[in-house]
Image 1 (cartoon, helix red, strand yellow):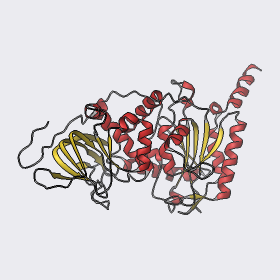
Image 2 (cartoon, rainbow, N blue to C red):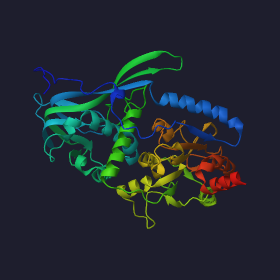
Image 3 (cartoon, rainbow, N blue to C red):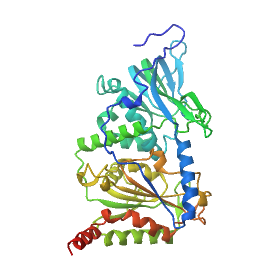
Length: 431
């Protein structure tokens, strides 16, 4: 156990600050390429510049992460992400939970939104699971070793995804106090980032935010908790659990994401436009000779009952194509298989993603380049396509130009994605 003085808890860095040293099973070595489609070539240059600028501001140049520890403290789970530690020796604390030994805590923004849990928190938990494996795997199975906010959707997911690991989690309700007689570990981050003038600046930032506000969010590194290595660790964990659960790959499907009228942040697509897009997608798959069934996905069954976390996980594990407007469902592209049909050497067999997003001409819909392409740090396990909303789109109702969809379709359904076209090409070679 770390040594400490009589007056304050000890702090100690553990694990490694060099994320590149992790032994990660590389799932996909394909190039990270973003396909942006537009009908008017005049839209391409400003859109490309806008994307480049947004990507630069999304993540710092050289983020690093490490873990600190404190001993014999209480931790209150208040609103927000603040790690509100108190020394147990100096405070007469009322404890809702009492733990001993080594414990890990992860707290950050928007735990209540399940999409944020998937794309932001699960990768960090995967990293903590890696660097603190001895803490999280030691002791009795009933011993709690990880503290997380008690959100039912997140708990349901973890209990399905990795029941043994979930058994080590203490789900803490808001305003509860956990007292730890031992050592608590928590992540901190450091960033070297560059402004647009090329000036380098280094700042030491923690992921502890002020309750009920965004105060304390690192201004130079908006995504303090994000790192491509975290994503790769999460992808490794997903593959590991899929194999352990013996999840056979179901018949592939093409998912079309529909945002309901009550969806947070609006962006519901015009109904007629949406029907045209779904019909076109169905027609093109059939013309290509592809067997996928188009599944309209909104997170619910036909009777309106919500899909379980397991059902959604399995659905995305079988998806070869995911299309729709930017929204929380895109977080689950993390679950998509890295390659179809076990073709582990062919990047052409990657699943495809088509995301409709706000662009320079439709900036009134949402802030600049809100896309899971950047949120997942240019995901290499999927072939990524984006189409801008049209200029007449609003924050509440959005449109995609059908002619631009046709332009995108020529790339989305290229010959290597169309068995019938490929067969015709092979026949033509013999004539």
